[in-house]
Image (cartoon, rainbow, N blue to C red; front, top):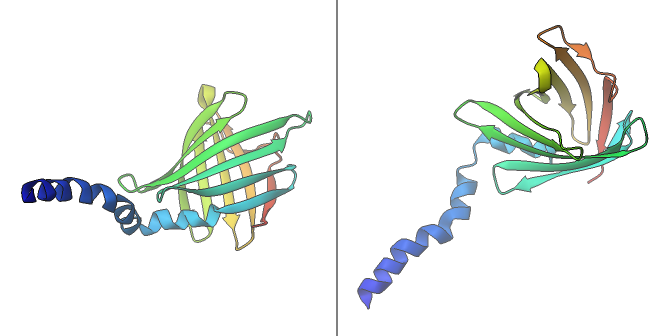
Length: 164
């Protein structure tokens, strides 16, 4: 009986201890993703909302929706995480129209920059300056290795406000 209890303790203890270990191992870089967490509204030029929350202890999961130029609602799911081996943030975007892409991000102070690789050599860059309850953003794109240009589809710049 003692042997069975010892075996169960050795096998089960690590399983029950996993959540505490994950929190203890969250690097400071991952903790910086807290800047995204909350409910936000687009102020300009988009009409929409997005909500970001922790998915476990290492990933921030965001859902957003906005109206495009035709008045149709676009939905997006975004996953951001810190990759300690590459020392970058990894971002994955999924859109309601079926499009998906991935990118890399960096942070300097309160300025976040993400660069996404798109189809046919297109690259997309978003720069966010996040303050306590608001953020300003700028969108740019580069086609086939060309210079970065303001992106008109979403407006080249805008702002969001944290409502919670």
